[in-house]
Length: 393
Image 1 (tube, rainbow, N blue to C red):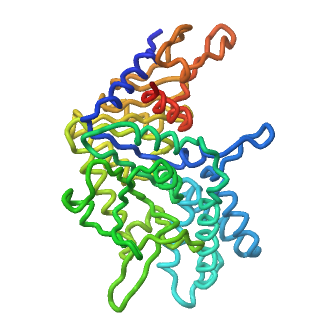
Image 2: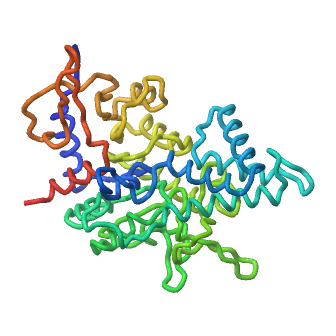
Image 3: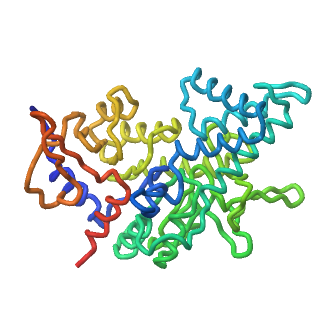
């Protein structure tokens, strides 16, 4: 039976990361946020809930508003399913905002008036903002984002590291600042730093190579909009309970919000078009079609660009990620039980002596006559430990 060698796969990844002259970026999804937390008794409690749990929390808060809101929430979920979308909170919030744009003053949609839809949208937005902005003082000294920050602080690169994230929380910013890593996020100023799109397009308008770039592609809980006369700006300030700059799906294209999203998307495209660029994808489910097209399009047009997708769970053969990776030799997908490398999908081979992958590759022994083996580098906590191991003496 054909298989992939986990030790070689991890060693190749390590070699890529060790090259100081290689353009390097990380794309981080919700799976990285829920990797931070602690054990409560014998149960793991994430500081920030995963997408499914966050959706349930938002749904419960909506249902507490009354029967009509509960029915509307269920109806919106059914509409998402009918359109082939998931029913996670980003899709739900996107559809609610689309309904708000479509509804007239005396109309109703899903049994709600325009004012009631506004109340529904506000409830979801505020719940998200509350859940993704916990008390950071409760974080332990060692958590996955801090490990990533320590690795960045201890590595020297000729090209700035770029960190793209679709998360709304500020865990990466907190961790990087705790490690005294200079960070640039596209905002400039000192009183109310404002978003400056030109600083993403022109290198001379950005800080030097020692500054790590953090691009919040779906918005952030510490962004807000201000208006002065006829001008409108997006500023970074204290964490807001309103969540007004949470930018899921369709809302990224709203005229008042599109500048950050389009600027960051263009930044991702230009990063991927660099010669020999390397993008590491962590905790991301490939649920954003625009980001997906940027990645897969770059892989088609730039054969020396490589993307590693490190998945926490196994993926279905019918999934978009599996299908696309099978068509592209410069995309490597690593899941617990198998990998797609060079356009070939095989399980991991079993081995008792693994030097490089020893902490990341575990064998569960035999299930019947078949030995089950798992690679856990798709767990952001394990990947961060892997990074730290590279700079320890």
